[in-house]
Length: 463
Image 1 (cartoon, helix red, strand yellow):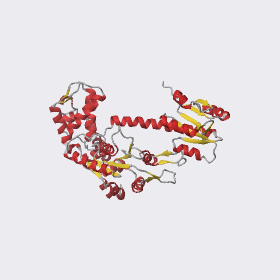
Image 2 (cartoon, rainbow, N blue to C red):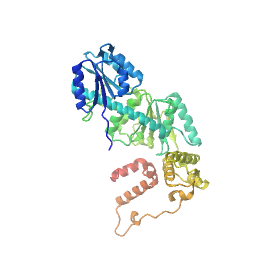
Image 3 (cartoon, rainbow, N blue to C red):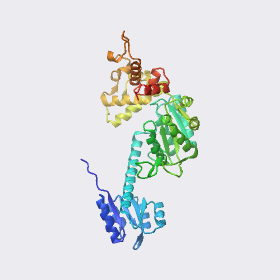
């Protein structure tokens, strides 16, 4: 069983009563405390004990707390500093915050407020560490390299380079699910700001289809304390967190109308307002939106705001499906093979036979590059031969007859009749299975528009 260590707080205040009171209160709250009444050798003590939070009095005998704060920040110690001040105007504390303090507390203290401020500082520290970790993961697993040499892909790269060079504020990327829209988005980000390993500008991605409308709104724009029942503290939204870098709005075609209105305001005014807030916060962020829907049709059907569509489509890129880029199939397959061989430490597999490559190239790939990637990952994990040959490939790809479906999964009209609704449900289920749960491709299998397919799913209660 993993045991979490107590968070460590270093307290520097020359008032013995304040030091004792704060130490007892924070110890009772579950923190490990070390208190010092003077600032002598404070940097050596911090390096030796390595606390999470420092509570630092601004007025100390012989030294100014602000000078110590500067020293802590210059040292690079990953510690949050909370300033303690007896100044009712708090001007000095505000100045200290501009120099890097996490927060400040004004004497005399409200113990509950102290606990809240310390807790927020520790939570912010945890989030910053998590962001750094995720950034490293992003560098390792989500590189921005574009694989393939088809004319369509070269044209996309050329347009993307021009958009990145101009630092356009918003870009729309369209294409079927699995074509690599996020890869292109990351490629544009790398051209604008540099590769992940050298750039600190954030790349924040959010799947607009994966979150309920109310939750997506609070995630994108943030909220002020008290904006709703569970809003116990202020929270920055993803637009604010992406400041100076790029935010990716994946599947923007699935957003609700009121969110589309808010997004249009962000794109036009370059400001956001937190839920429950009164102030507009300026943002400097590149917005890249992706969708697998035909937004032009969605506008005609009233499912997407035309002004938002026109604003987004000023700069757009369309990624053709993999079946229209046959030249890229083998390059992608070899890339994925190399990627997963390293990830799973499978050094035995060296490549594909010419026969296997011919089969891969002949397949239509309804799931596009994602389907190819998933297949190659499966082959790397399950096979140990030095070369992938046709015998290793699944029957659905090679064209061999696989096991027949159970008869009960098909409808047969009998003298007693059948339920038309059950028949529709069965066909939709079969289409979704064949398309690997890709609604766009499932709709094509049934010769339906994407919107009509979604309507049928909702009508039949299959969401």
